[in-house]
Length: 239
Image 1 (cartoon, helix red, strand yellow):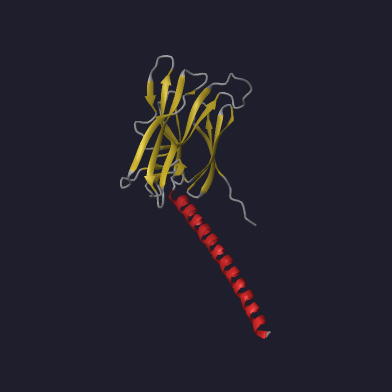
Image 2: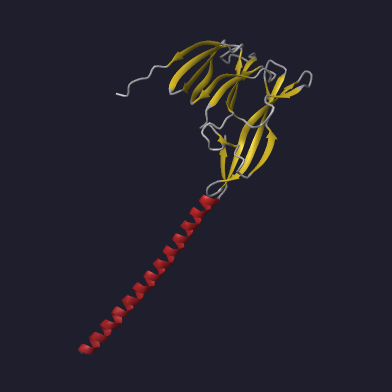
């Protein structure tokens, strides 16, 4: 009798062991599958092409493929001029992936619609235009009778942090030009951080920025863009 019970118990435990082995093997297969899927996902994430903007490579040691295109014409209302952005796209090798820097405005083409004359703002395409802003004879939009009276630019034209790229991490300049793209001139250079450039009244533009670790406000007159008043922004306590 005891032998019969023992044999039945052994058969039961062998069945349990087989079941556990099957479950363990299944769990191991699922784990391997999930681990392989995760590894493939991470590999794809690190090696896929990454797209960035406002990055222009200027290092001669890097292999960069480039393409240029013209953007959509922008009519400077109330004037005979049309402005068209020159966009520079680059593809280059990153640390783990191919990177594409797209939609980088590097120049502006100006066209006089009344006589067909065209000219570039710059002679070359080796700068980065972070922003091209227009200012009007009226600060508020009350109707469609506003006219463009000035042009402002936020420019990076030097690799100031030494990473062989022109980006917003470099020092920037605020500049202006006439409506036909002539008489380009810098208003403020060496800006560490630009807070804002904004037309605040019909005849004034306000620039808020940091330079030499000090924050400033600077007023300019419109349409001449002559400096009116600069003030140091006082620091506030943290406690």
